[in-house]
Length: 96
Image 1 (cartoon, rainbow, N blue to C red):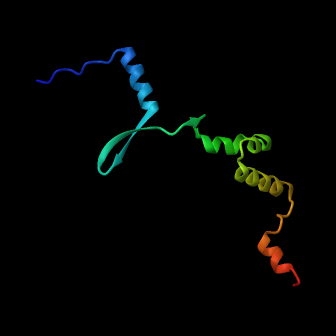
Image 2: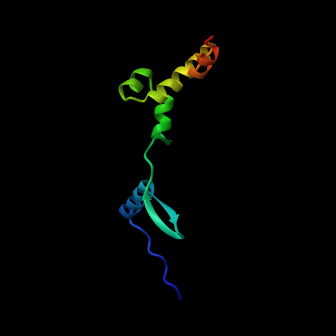
Image 3: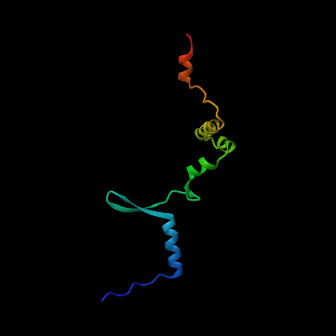
């Protein structure tokens, strides 16, 4: 006859919950490995949170020029401004 399973104490339950939030299990070459979870802010990955909530000054100060450019294109699109011509388009329009 099997023994009944021992219940965890409240401290053990809290530790288990903390480890579950901190780490995740993945498979690598058919074996389970424990790895740290990617950092999140309010349930979103950090990059996505920054993309949604950063203002142009913060993006400039932290040298996030790609995100700043994407933010500017989005603002232009919302305002109904036509996008600027690219270098290739300008070269095609040159008469010589």
